[in-house]
Image (cartoon, rainbow, N blue to C red; front, top):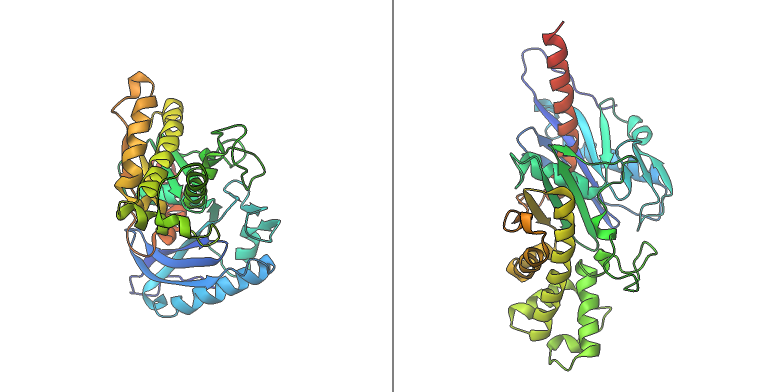
Length: 341
């Protein structure tokens, strides 16, 4: 078991283990209260293997990097971001791109650790990461949109992450753009993420190739080989079809964000992930479309911001923020209780 108490006369840095489980790779690292990642690593998720083998390998990888810092660190908690992870139950249920059907994360991690463990979906973890360490520091009402293979979202209102009644609130990526639109991996049609995501913009390029005569280098790339990075590079060269794809993507995202603003009245919406790295190519058309479709009382009030989580450990920081946030709540409750004893 790995539990580290304080040694006599030795001040040890409290750290949490942040874990981000992806369909291909899992990244993890140790993060202190200030958001500094002291050590990190990665392992292949091996999504086809049973979950218990994954958690055994995760423990081995985490122990290996902790060996270099354990003399000065105390592990106080573990935060795990994963697809279809439920904060309330501590489970992962039927995650996409993984062969696991139902995993009791708390039980699996309890085989190796005697510290608090919490889990939620990766977009929620990023939202807490932005609140503690990134662009949302000092904010109480904001939305994080993760633009990767799909579109995830995390919602914070009144300073609290919104989980909803069953732990799955905040699926903006699965709100409907077109009832008869593109087929989504969730089994429905016309979901926002089929239009606004790395995969979505590739589908938009293919539609434009089929439905317009616009000259473009992208016409010579098969759909199987096309990537959002290729589209970005083409847009940077002034390729008009690529630019039109970004404009279309931003227009749809802006419309749906205007709906979210009407529901939540956030101070800011923060973009995170690969497609967000396109900068003005995605920010400008999204902002223009959002302002055009906003209910009047919200116009020119909501900021669109890039992620403030920098470096190569952004996913680890998000997962770590999940447990730091819980630990902070416990400390506050303890302090209040002690005050009135």
